[in-house]
Image (cartoon, rainbow, N blue to C red):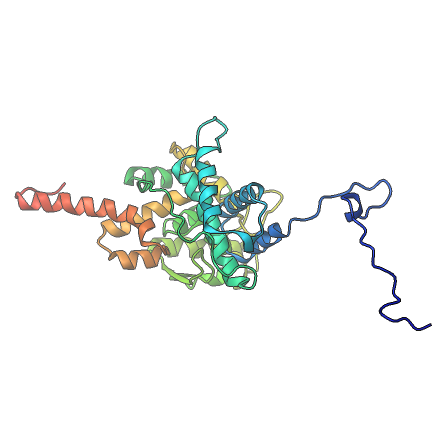
Length: 336
């Protein structure tokens, strides 16, 4: 039978209710549809070299933003992000019932800025203009560097001598951390990353490779740690993890991010140093470089700081020390 356009029956539109949008088997729990905006967030988190803590923070802040706004990414405008900043400032409260600090507000906005910068670059067909442009961060005084004093470092070295099975590994770990490496960077190190003098970091937080020169004593400690592992029967190659776990469930495997934190916390307990964490050694290294007179641009290269502003906390102390020394020289007194 031949049909002409005029003879075709009229098209009827059948409205679909919420139940009709989800196909489930009898007895099966119906799941809500996946928010496709969240799919992009997960892709963003996977595609960036984020430390575990940074990833958690970004995930939490982006999830909070998506819960606040139902707009699709291409519908967002700077005014929406400005309103969200007001929402963080005026309506969100901490567990203690207090308003968010300026630093916490900045963390939320910084997560948005990073995500939408990535979206504009990766999916220009979805979002051509970054809606966070023009949204300024709160002005927050730069926190002082939490450097360890020479006396505290002596306590750390003494505490290492009191360790049992992990003594050699943890001593090598502290030597590496004392050269400004982030915990996440240490996790990625392989035996081949160490050439006997330098550590090569191909994958860093700033996505720029970095070479870290080690002091003589640190080179010797690390080389002895690797020799000891070979003497115990471990077959090492260039892709073997530089730091290994002693945990019963993961013995011999790559030392994890949390494993590094646990090891340093244990050292802090023995050394009676409150809140000792891996970043304490990074602060100390950066501060010491400047107190030794290393050019700030070289110091930033060694530590892998991309932001000059973030590095400013270390230059403040060195400049203060230099000013005090200049004063005593000017009045003819010796600098203690």
